Image (spheres, rainbow, N blue to C red):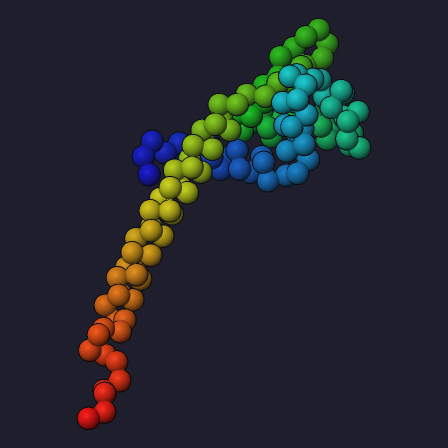
Length: 126
């Protein structure tokens, strides 16, 4: 693979996305553009404190950012970390595809080499 992002970046994003609640927050933020923790807490049955903790994990992974607007922080999706992780995953998938294609070619070549030839059939009577 080339141009691999730092492992910690990918690990952080994948760890943040491993939690279904955080994926829901990310989906909500993507749909709404931005929202406060209180507004997000209204959408799912969790406390505002739980929302803040989940947002902190998403923020640490670079997936969301918070900006103060008066007394409340407004959170929005930051797609760069997700884009970087998606590119890493696509590169990994391409590596696997190339490896599997090589295995397929070797297996097909072996099948051709071991397969019946015109001289391998039953011996005609006679």
